[in-house]
Length: 515
Image 1 (cartoon, rainbow, N blue to C red):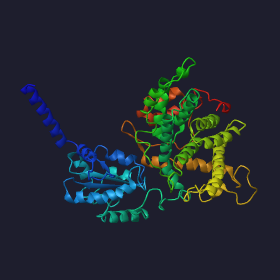
Image 2 (cartoon, one colour; image 1 turned 180 degrees about the vertical axis):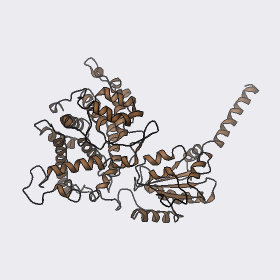
Image 3 (cartoon, rainbow, N blue to C red; image 1 turned 60 degrees about the vertical axis):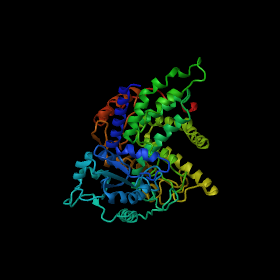
């Protein structure tokens, strides 16, 4: 090899080494983490910078946030990191003991990219910690702001003191030794109707998990193709999450190309769906950050309780209160078909099929379908109450109950009167129950999104106003329009829905006899 070649190789090596030295600290950290026996602990706190600061804090499901402003050259900051991480591991990540409550983040003020951001918060020393609602951080902070929602944490120099400070703020009793699942700090969602607002994130989680299960188990076949399309159409029109409506539309728009009608024609045998499944995995039905790996409203007090099944029920209830009268039967058959074809718990699927099959007359009113689903849920709860009591498999903190309890809806219960046959031995005021369902799974469910808003694809803030029950069925063509015009989704939604109000689905649903 000539001298010129050696010189070129040497120069390339020097350039690469220089780029590592002057480049991202993340690269060096990743290399260090891969070294066997490395001493660096896993980082649980989320590192933010000026480019993602507002977006991450705006979109987090957490009720509160802590931002630590530090400098990587500061010895005190390096020593404090161990304390901060010990608290962060309780709240951050899929293995958190108390997820979805406090988002713990940090910003390195020694990086030039963050200079203006740190100035925006009048950072006067390192480390400096701020506490407040996540959405309030975008405005910054200064010492002369008397009415700011952000607070400087003045007593958090150790992990114990920082956690005690958090406990005082939210009235909790978290401990550094708390273990996952088996804990006594879960807030009850029975007596506090506002808890359902947190379930909007669980509905996203359940939707993404269901989609993952369908792909993982290769459940898209000739006989299940149509039921999946119908359910996706229902999600595009009525899912409470804008992210999931947009993602479902993208899947639906591309479905015919990925899964054509003649894919399982009679002259084809042993169809290989691997390529189709692989491409579908690239579509994030509720966004690339979902599933997050944890539950909030649907979180159980012990492992393997609540979670996905709870999130799926909340999804179905939220769909039932968003449809119009003319959509009640199609929504009913869409949900029945979906559970029958894609819910992999065999016994649960069979019970739900039997309840669907027991309906003899088509639904003509949205009210009737919402009340049927509510009654079916109570029927399931009543059956599981007996089984869990005998087998000791229930969640002790969240036992199955007949819904809604008097704490949530006193007006739903008659004080006296004969027992209602379909109401699990409770004499229900069904009109009041329907009002409760609309409020609980409609307005209150999306209130957290309406408070925080969502960052649209074009960088604008889009406030969800989808809590009403007046929405229309979306044909495949309309779904395409939604996907292509997602940047103008909020502005066009009202006009589009009013114009499409009386249209029907592009595909007719299979009758219940075919499920």
